[in-house]
Image 1 (cartoon, rainbow, N blue to C red):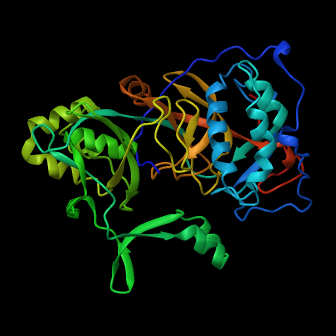
Image 2 (cartoon, one colour; image 1 turned 45 degrees about the vertical axis):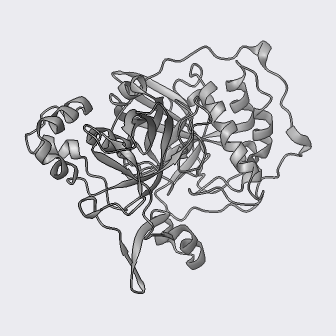
Length: 416
């Protein structure tokens, strides 16, 4: 899971695959086509619907670059293949079981460059997403920061591992056990700590102090807070080694931007990351107070970087793909869902295919709220910082779902 601020990116479209690159559809791995469910499963919430659409209804579908989404989908498939075939997709209100996606997964490994659009049109059907909450796209990225194993200016803020006294409540499991629609609409997990025989909320940022052995390293306070907002990042240590600070846990409090709090108080009129860093340097005695305006706190685990082309693992426990992965609200979309967004970036159209592989506290606001993973480093950060605009959504379901299924209602998406 990532807990982040409102940021943004853009990308231009590329040419559609030509007819000469289109192989015949296959049933990969020797599998036979999956029979669609005969009895529709009606979603519990009447305010969320998927309505059948044609690919030609989707603005920008014919020109969008789908190569990153195919890469993200292959990574998702590798995760699904490690699960029991009859296991349901994690999160969301549609998607069925993982084996429903296996034919598309096997076929994805045969697709050559230029065939991506043909692949998604051949193995999936489009559904327009209708639902409550925000209809907006923002973006996030993986920062690369300088760090130190020892405390020394300017490396004064610790990066902490998950505390040993933190316990996690799996509300998703309780939702199924109690057959509770209320619990299904809540965050899947909650973190707290034991107080006698009761679990109570974990302390706010201002009350968190390190345990012995909990400190991974130190960095500039602005860099540590940026890592907590983005959810993870790469650490360049002073001794020349590099590692990833991967999201491990969050204390459970709603994110409240420390930059926004300074802006609202009139002390930081232009709340950019560079201005925030300068303000902290100029006001060392107020650093803790400024950061404590955000009660949310993210803990990390240190990991070695095995694939420098991939991002950190998202909430789906799959390495994120730059411009191919998106954070979603898992109360509506399952992890692994293939979604197309029609949004804007810096006054221009932003139309792109993604795979749902992450979430975040600021993202759990409806089925049309998303956060695009822009990649790693300052260029991705510059993209991400500019993106904040409205969007429409479509989701793609395997052909096995051609019959009415959970969340699907009669009708078609509006014309683009």
